[in-house]
Structure formats: C-alpha cells, structure tokens
Image (cartoon, rainbow, N blue to C red; front, side):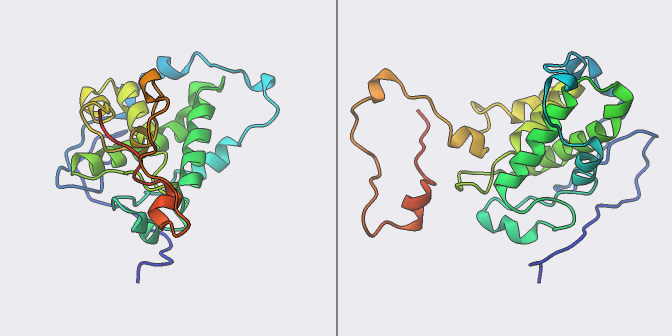
Length: 218
C-alpha cells in the first residue's frame, strides 16, 4: 500500500555535467535542460524586506530540509495525498502552500547568494518536477484546500532560468490547470445581485460544502 509512504528518492544514472538539475520524475522527457550556473540571482538579490525588520523567520536549514527530497505529486485529485511521502513533503495543500510560501519569501530576504544557494537549488528542482507533471498533462485543480501552492515554484523557476516554456505553463490563459487560478476571481460590477449559482441546502453534499466547483471560464 502507498498509504503511509515514507521516503522516496528519484535517483537515476544520467550523463550530466556538474551543477545540472535532474530532469522531472514525471513524463518521458529526461533531457537535462538547466544548470545552476544559469540561475539569475538578480531576481532575488533586491530584498523586499531585511531580516532585521521582521520579528521571526524560518531557519534556512529547516527550509532546506523540507525541500531536500522529491515531492511526489502527480495525481490530479485529492487522493494524491495518499502518495505524498511523509519524509519528503507535507501532506495537505495548506501545509504545502505554507512551506512553498516560506521558502519563496525567505529567498527574497537579504541573505547572501551563497547562503541562499542550497534552498534555491532545491526549490527550483521542485519547480522543474512540477513543470514536468504539468507538461505530461497533469495539474492541480479546484479541490478545496488540497491542491494549493504548486504554481509558484514553476513560475519562480521559469523566471530564474528565463525559461519561456515554464513561464507559459504558468499562464492561466493558456493552461488553466492550477487551483490558484480556478478558485481565485475578482467580483465585477455586473456580478453584484446575480442569483446564487449553487446555494447550500440543508442536505448539501461535500461538493457544496467545500465549494469545489464554483468556477467557470468567461
């Protein structure tokens, strides 16, 4: 059974040069596209906030450990929780999004490039892996709190590598595959006063309760 899965590795024998990123575990394309020397640190060297201006921050070593091992996350359903290796990654979308947010924000702080390197490499590798899932036809759709957080690592990796293909996957107009896009919307003037599309009933289903399907493309 995969329930209670512990550690999972994604080892492979590849003809890689020093500093190359592992190809995604998902899909058949195992081409090595990027090296750590391609990372554009200028994107994260102008901090939005200095560490001495905030009360608390996660330790880099704790964050590095959270992203040390592969996050196995290629099933586009809430049952993906059953294949998340507990020694590799958080289980639920809330904690996944929290870990990703903490890492992304920490990379924007005024650490030196050398101090950021380990976390940055591991975070970008996650972005590469998630991009591989998306490229192979996967996604993380509207399932309440389950599928949050997966878009940002792809987007950051695309920016840091200046990789147009990764950035395109994160474009909701072309690839409507992320919960962040499917369950985030802006109320327009014409929306005010419209009848409720899906009202809660006394016998409401789990779909009603979690509001999983209250989205539509215009």
